[in-house]
Image (cartoon, rainbow, N blue to C red; front, side, top):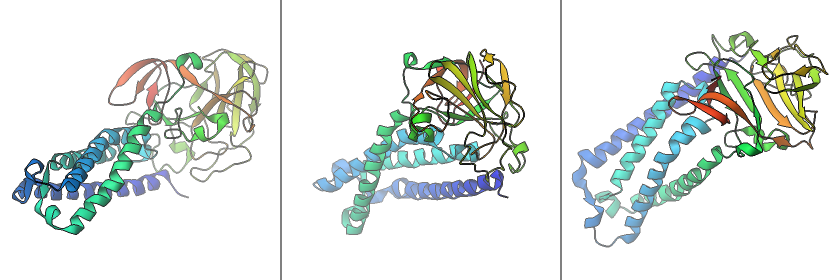
Length: 350
C-alpha cells in the first residue's frame, strides 16, 4: 500500500533537485555578471543593436513579473504545497526570486558573447518567447485566485469544525479549486485538520488513523432541517479508495431554505448524530469526519447547491462565506469577518 509519506518523499526529492539546480544557476550567473563583469558593457554605452537591446529589456520585464508571480503560485496556487516541507517550498520560492532579481539587474548590461555570437542571440530570443508570454499569463491570472462573489451574494455560515485546519481545495476559480469545473460544486471546499507544525498526518500517512481529521467533530454551520442522511459506507483506504457510485460516502444534507441545501460529506460510519427531519442550529454537533466515498484521505467536503441530491447534474452551486474566523494566508494570522477560503489557507475559530 502506498503511503502519503512516500508520496511526500518523492515531491521533496524533486523540489530538492530543483533547488540545487536553481542555486547552481544563481552561482553561475553571479560569476558571469559580477565577478567577470569586465566582459560586460552597460546597455546605454552600446550603439545600435536595437533588436538585442529590446530582447534584453523584454527578458528583464518577464523576470520582474516572475518576482511578483512566484509568491502567489508557490504559496497559494500550489496543489502540492501540503506534501512538501514548508522550509523547502520557501527556499525554492526564494531561489526563484533571487535568480529573477539577478536577471533583472543584468538586463542593464550585455556580455561580449551575446554581442558577437549568433547562438547566444538565438538563446535569448527563445528565452523571451517562452518567459514573456508565460509571465504575462501568470500575472493576469493572479487575480483569478481571489475571484469570489461579494458578501451580499453569499450565504454567511459558521465554520463546521474547531481547531486548526487547512483548505486543500477552496475558492472561486479552478486555479485554486478543482471543484469549480463542476457547476453543482463550484464553491465547494475540502479541508483537513493540522497539528502545530501544519502537518495533516503523522507516522507514514498509510492508515486512516494517521490523519488528524479522522473522528474530528463536525458541527452544523447553519440553522436548518436535515433532509437526508446517508450512514452506510465504510472508510476507504488511504490513496487507494475510490467509490464513483457513492462519491459523497456518508453525508448529511441540511435544508437552509427552499431549494438551498448544504452538504457535509465523507463522514465516518456510525458517527452521524442526526436523523432525517431533525431541526439543527448552527454549532450543533452532528457527526465526525471520516474517509468514506470517493476520497484520497480523511477530509471534510462542504458545499451548497439547489438540489437535495449530490450527484444531480442539473444542480447549481451557491457561494458562502464564514461569519468570523482567524485565517493565515501569508505570514501571520488575521481575524477575518465574512471571509472565504482559497487553497492552502490555514484557519481556525476566532
